[in-house]
Image (tube, rainbow, N blue to C red; front, side):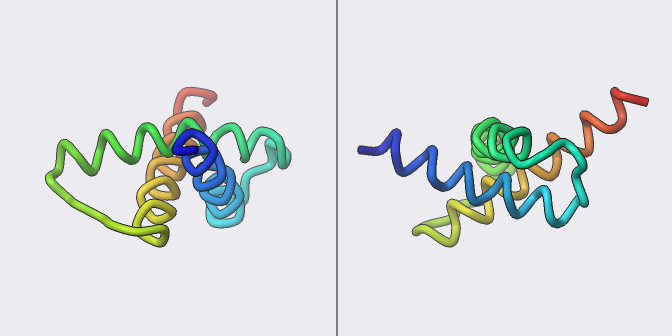
Length: 78
């Protein structure tokens, strides 16, 4: 059940990151980015010692990770 929760949070985060960063990769790309961004965000917040709780905290963490990942992909793409 946790895997489903993680995937749903990642999908929402990818959608939000796509809107925030005005991504042109398409909906599927944004959704996959959100799932990977959830991992990146969780790792980053853990390293920085930032703790979040609940659904909103998970979405914020995943969105931040997805935005950072999308920014890095744009830098690498150039």
